Image 1: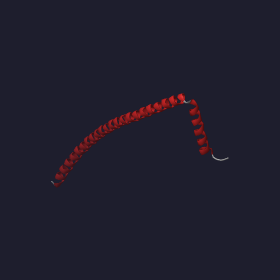
Image 2: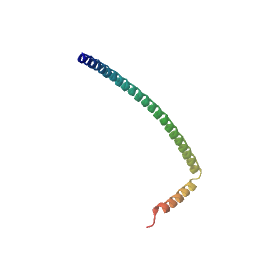
Image 3: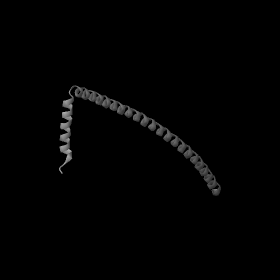
Image 4: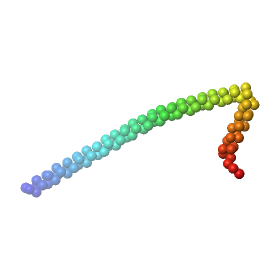
Length: 105
């Protein structure tokens, strides 16, 4: 009789282990699905942040471009009204830079 009870207990244990394997498989599938969902969310947030930063960079480039164009126009206008002064100023700046970076020979 004790042997019969042990076999029944072992059969019940085997059945419980089978159910446990199935439950673990379902749990792993759920975790995998959740991980994919989380990865997709992180990817979407990363793409959104990248687009935002690219917009900021474009804005900064446009601002720098506008500033450079205005400085160019202003310099062109001043050199157009006083060309000799512009040539002398360029010569003087060239001499100073030549002295600073030319070194001694």
